[in-house]
Structures are given as structure tokens and as C-alpha cells.
Length: 357
Image 1 (cartoon, rainbow, N blue to C red):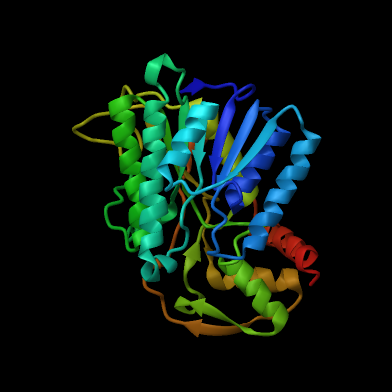
Image 2 (spheres, helix red, strand yellow):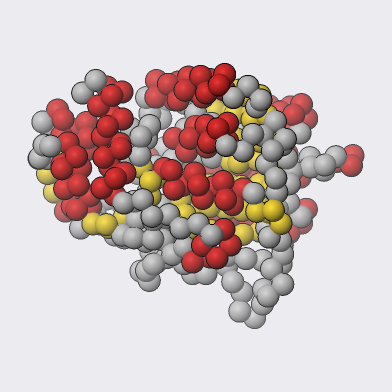
């Protein structure tokens, strides 16, 4: 791995108004002092746009406190190739962090077009822009980091999930697009030597979270005295990962530019490394919690019991996720470990303040 000093760089963050994107931008403003941060987001209405606008306002306030870093926001869609090309030509980012994507497993069943547009075409546009950033002797993109997902593990039953496990059986279109991103990035890394790192995030939660996620939906319903939908009768297990741990993982990886793996063996190929400058990491809490237990933790934080409507497993869902993070620890020295009790408590505190609940 090659260490990169983020100070003085230009960093492009797509999905900058999103849950992870906004938190990353604020961490960069407060910590690493890049010269410029460019944020892109299309502010679509997949969930309440007011949450996204509120996040952008927090970024704007913070940027005034840290004026040494220029903050530029552009409303736009990464599926708009001319717009992406113009941004790269105008600002020549050294680091690109792609967090823009159409999220949600269940939504991909009813609205597949959105996933092809953002997750496939949009990502292709970014890869092409990275490729051409080297034209005419320019410095070019030093590191592309992009969000993958624990969903790529699909029907795998061996836990914890390891980046060395094959991930050839996705059970949703969302998962298939994320696996495709990893393959596309590898092809461009191999052909054009673009250093690229994919991050498989595991069930991210915390303050400012997405309103379509279970924690948000459960909190809203419990406070309103309404029943909550508990799929697979609460027996599903998830590796719930607190937002601060996700951001710390992204920051650690961002500064470490992947190099070709000299130990890579084509006879016994490691799916997480390559002869190209390409890497895959899990970022998860390395712990799995039953959904029923998670709900009980939320009940304790709210001081109110849930009305549980037990339901069967939904199409596209998997019974368990659990992140193996040994390579993340070995390469970055970081291990996510925020407890669910702390993380849920922080979310509830934010929720009550934001909504005046």
C-alpha cells in the first residue's frame, strides 16, 4: 500500500447529500484539510428530500468554520456523462469517492430502471472520467473509492463473510449492480492502472440516517403507537455498523492507495486482491445481532414497547450478514466496534431533537 497525504488534494464525493456522503464530507472538513471538496448529489425523492437538504445545510455551516477547505456543491446525476466530464475537466480531482447509488434491496424489485441508471451507467461514467483524467500528461486520479455492499454475498451461508469468499449468487438486482461495480472497477484498474478500492458496507445506521431503513421506520412507528413490520419473525441477523465506524473505515482506506498484490496466484485466485491496483474490504462491526434483539435495544432507548407484526421473509432478503474484517484490520489498523446499545441511543437522541418527538 502507498500512503497518500490528503492535505492539499481535491476530493470528489458523489452522493454528498446522502447519509454516508454527508458524514464523510464533514469528517474531511474537520480533519484532513483537503484543498477542495466537490460534492455531487441529484437530491432524488427516493426518501424525504428535506433530510438531504438538512445535511447539506450542516455541511455549509461547517465549511464556514473551516474556510481553509473550499466546499463546492453541484446538483446533478452521475448518469449525466457530460456533467461528469465537465467536473473532472474543471477541478481535476485526485481522489474520487463514489457514494452515489440507488439504494434499497426491496425497491430494486419494483423500480429496476433506477438501479441500472445510477449504479451501472453512473458508475461507468465515473470510470471513464477517471480513465481520461490521465490524458495529455495530467496527474490523474490517484485513488477511486466506491461503495459496494454486503448484499453481494447473496446466498452465501458461511459466516463471517470474508472478502476471499466467492460472491457469484446475488439474490437481488441491487446486489447484482454492486457486484458489477466491483468487476467494472477491476477491468479499468487492470487496463488503465487506476487504483480502485471497493468497500462492502454492512447495515449502516446512526444519526441522520436514511428514513427507509428499519431503525428509522421502527422508531417512527413505536413513538406513534403503530405496529412495526418484523420480517422473518425477527429471526434475521444483521451486522449493524455505526456511521462513525463506516466513516473511519473510509478515511483509513482513502489514504492507502492499493498496489498490485505480488502474492496473487492465478491457480488459487484471491477474490479481494489482484495483479492490478485493486482491493475489496468489508466494513462491518464484525458482530451479528438478531433483529428481535435490535428491536428490544430500541425499545429500551425509547422507553416504549413496540407492537410487533411478525411477517415472513421478503424477496431479495437474506437471513444473516456478518462481516469478516481481518484484512481491514491488517491493512489499516482499524476495527469497527461501536456497540448497538450506544449507536441506537445516539440515533434516538438525534431523532427526538430533529423531529421534536
